Image (cartoon, rainbow, N blue to C red; front, side, top):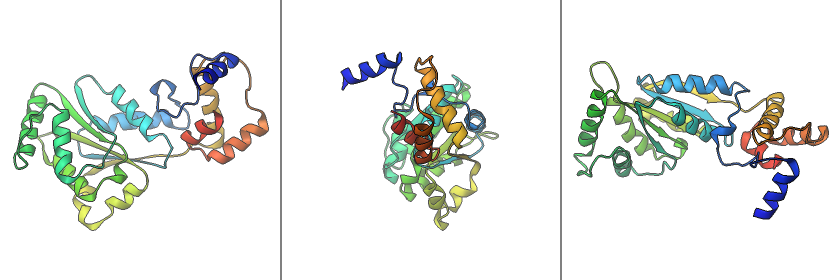
Length: 243
C-alpha cells in the first residue's frame, strides 16, 4: 500500500497525498464561503457570550473547521476539544475538568472546583473555549449538564465559551422541550453548506496545487462532471472519489 502511494505521488510529482480524508488545516480551501465561515466562527468563539452552534451535513468539513478554529485562536485562549461526545451526564464535566488540569473531586464538588479554575484563568487574562464535535450524538442529559457551564460568569463575561458542532440532527435534538434552557443560551448558529459545483471543481484543483501539482487538468471533463455529480458538494466524498 505504501509502495502504491509512492508510485502515485511520483507519477504526478506530488509531495503529499492531495485527497486524504483526514482533516488537515494545511489544505484549507477558502472558496465556497469557507473563508468567511471560519472568520465568523472565530469571531463567535472569542465573544464569550453564550453557546455557538455549528451545523453541517456529514462530510461537509465540520471537523476541519473545528481544528482550524482551535489552531487560529489567540494564545490567551485555552481550549478543550472533545471529538467523542458519548460521555454520560456524570462523566462529561469530569472530562472537561481533567483537560483543564483540575484535580479529581467528588461529584458534588466537581463543578465548584472547575469554576474556581476558570476564575483563576480569567483573572490571569485567559479565556476558555470548549468545543464538542459530533454533538448531535450527545445524550440529551449530557448537553444539559454542559449547559450549566454557561451559567459560570463574572460580572461582565462568561467564563466558558461553548461551541457545539454537529449534523442537522443537532437542531432536532436541541428542539426538545426539556432542552429549552440550552436553546435560550444559543447566541450564534452557523451553517456549513455543501460546495456548489463550480466551488467543488475549484476545491479539487486547490488540493492538487497544495500537494505540489504544477501541471494542467488531471481529470477529464467528463470524469470530473461525474465525480462532482456524485459528491453533491460534500468535501469528504470529493476526496474519496478523487483519490
